Length: 446
Image (tube, rainbow, N blue to C red; front, side, top):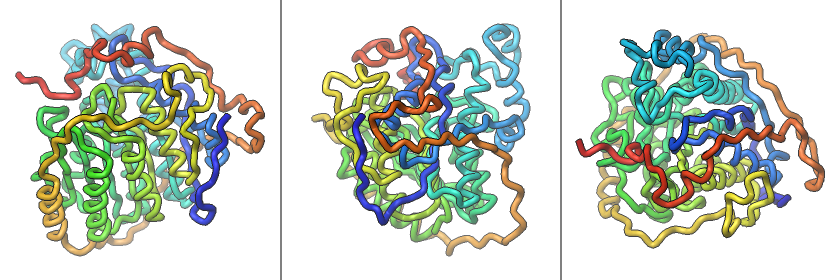
């Protein structure tokens, strides 16, 4: 096992980490690019890099029907709850939500509702932990499903754990900032908060002939929420340096103008280079810079997952960003783990940029437009102090890991029971193989 070393003792943060091993058992079906077991692969790296010693690890309570319907309609959630592979044909007939069953992007699969409960439960528990000031950073790599709407599944997402988490944060924080670095526009979260000035949404994404086709720079919110939606549309091939410059200039102005009391960062890993659906040219360091930016601000911070369709790189990314959260240096050599063979042939943590063209030729103009819009914001919105609604009741199970010796076998509670579905690994790893869902990377020409 590779041992992690602290970087700066003085800058330690309390970090809560939410994970349930069952998340890796769900299977969207053969040929589908969404692979929930990528979260299990990330967890394996987190354990075997020794990062668990600096985490408070929790198994979250699955979200209840009441929790999920704080955002989603009861009719829609009842539909998800009642549908299964046994009744899929009859249940879907003439139903307003039947597209869940017929859409290749959002298929019905065994345990779908329980999968949604785990994802939402992690983000809800993370928000409660931050609200109670029992942690500084809360991580839920099972979450980040940003496309789901109030009564609609979209883009591999059935329920929007992010919106549910933000609604909980708003009980204790006047203003919450949501930032999305997935390559796809965070349309579901933006839509949910499009008319409020208590949540600012900022999305950095591939735009144009690309799913979901929203997130133009002119989309800035409406009503009280006008100017509180910020969209940064990008073209193919953006590299670390340009992304860092763009991100920090925009976020510096956002932090100054909005003055958030809490931050939610969606860390979709499909913005990395080599992603099956993505087209950016970011490395782990370029992507992780966004985590470091907010960690350094000292605000309550929630990190959630999202997209990412080359599972070995998703695992690399979220393990690396967990290391950034706990301020630990990790070796570039991948430690031995249950998925070690899938990190070959180099068995290195970091990935290199590719020699591809950067089509982003107008970044300065985009930055200028966005900053000009932000300068039109009214002073920080005042929020009348009222008695806060009661916190969500989310008892979580802490997994104690007080093991100092890296050679000691990991506690049994941390070891997953590995259940793999045939085809989970190799159909996504070979270039050009089985691209059934690639229309999520770009819109149909029709």
